[in-house]
Length: 417
Image 1 (cartoon, rainbow, N blue to C red):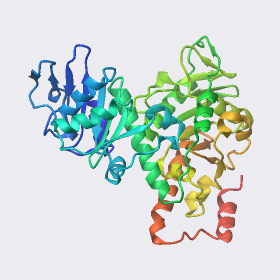
Image 2: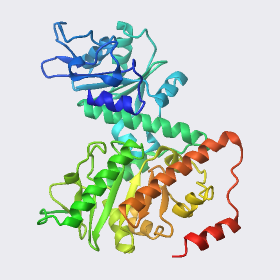
Image 3: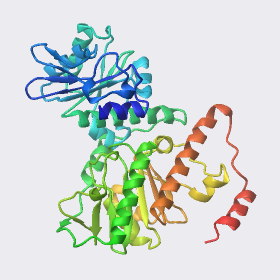
Image 4: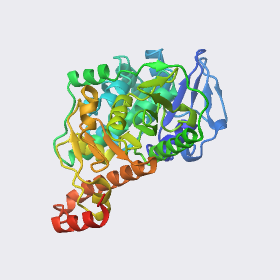
């Protein structure tokens, strides 16, 4: 029920579309019902289908139950399935293409290669055979010809995170295609990212939590969740940190769902070591390097807003001289070649500052600095709004940036420090 609520809330399915299921150890399959409003689904609406075919629940199971059952039979290790009609993946479906997950190292890690299943009548045994045969080849994500997508996982949360990550990847490819040629990572670059994201050494937990730390934890939790709701983060991607003192900062944990993250989940990093047993974001080394170099920076975030990220997978420049707010908050945006955040985080730290607080990381989202948690988040919102306006302007004609005289006037009035 909660997973379907998330999918429906973020318009990744419609009132009548999509279905979810979970398979238990005893073979019972719990599945969403047929012809029940996905926007008001209740716990009691979920249907259980036993291995002998007996149905328990107030409704009929989804008409797509045959392909859920077929997938579970072909891949016994799969325990959760998401099927829906999110707009970007439907665009791939009706174009008979699949997203290339080498767009991001995280998408490659989470989703792997994507399969494609030929069309058959919805709810039919033939559709079940087509989808199950594609899953049997080892795919976890399968685009359905003229239909949508099906994603499987070790559990429903695992399947949902794959589903959301794949839809984000598809959206970014579509947005980026409006800007120019889309750049994908090589296998060597994907491997570099995998090897370079080492965890800092761990130490014993610290003593009592100070009031300042409690407040920073509250702020980080609030803004990470807000960022997720505004689609600036996805469940599997995005890091946010805040400085406590010169040698200490708090950061999001690795592999944590950004939608459900809580105050105590944030990891304390002190003098380059993390508190045990929590595992900090893989961006901790980069954030540590930025704090060490820039004493006035008190918050750092990595995020994946789809429009700004689209600029990072093409060569299109992200012009900030569009409206006064954009230039005042963003200044001139840096572009960092892929790999810099892994190989030499200290060198990347020299490219950004509060005077130049934004960097587009090629094929890896955006980096934003701020004097506070609110300041960094505000810049992220302005960055994504600016990027979306630039993409939306493409059909209208050439962008006319503000003149040098206007920029000089803005600088004198608002950017004296």
